[in-house]
Every structure is written in structure tokens, then in C-alpha cells.
Image (cartoon, rainbow, N blue to C red; front, side, top):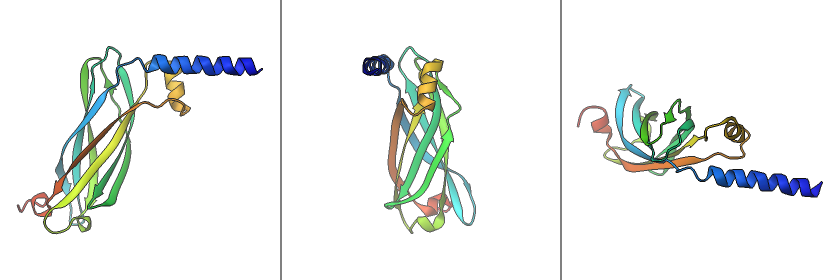
Length: 156
């Protein structure tokens, strides 16, 4: 029984190593743009650019992201990526982030957007490993900058 367990662990480890042979994608994020505003909040839309330099198409699954303004987390989001990173190509994913005006001070506020998009390797085995939480590869991204409420409101 113990030898079967060791064999199974060895096989799983070998498959994970083979999965690691795929060129890992990278992610960058572009400056947020105010896309909507009300009296209570502004919606900033950030664009994450995932780049796949490898030969293997990578289905994207989820994007988790957080916005911190002046040291306080003001938003945490999760959304389906609904995209695939084609081989030797890039994919753009828009992330809406609502920010209440009360979280922005007069003048400039500093922000930090950080997150990760998760992807699976092609094939039912890797999708099952992802769904079971046993293998969840991802690419992290972050962007730091400043927000000026006067500019976001269109007055600056």
C-alpha cells in the first residue's frame, strides 16, 4: 500500500514538473481610466495585458485583484477572465474598480493595484487539477500611481 502511494505521489510530481515546462505568461497593467462617475463614486477601469511567449495556448480562468488607496484596501474583486492566451500573443482584460469619493483625499491619493490571473494548461487532467485546487498557476501584476479627485471629476 505504501509503495502505491509513493508511486502515485511520484507520478503527480512528474506531471507537475512537466506542466512547469510550459513558458509562463507575464502580466502588466495599464493606468486606470475613469469610465463612469456618480455623486458617490468613480469607476476606474484598469487593463491587464497578459502575454504568452510560449507555444502552448493557455485558457485563463479567474482574475483576483485588490485596490489600496492611501494604505487602506478599498476594493477587492474577482472575475472570470473569459479569455485564452493564444500562443505567442497577448490578451487584454479590463478590470472595473469602483472607488468611493470618500476614500480619496483632496489633492492626490496614492494607490496600489495588485492581482493575479490564474490559467490552466490545456487538457482535462490539468483542468481537473485546477478545479481540485492542486495546481493553480498564475501570473501576478501590480501598478502604483496617484489619483486626483479634481481630475477624475473632470475639473482638473
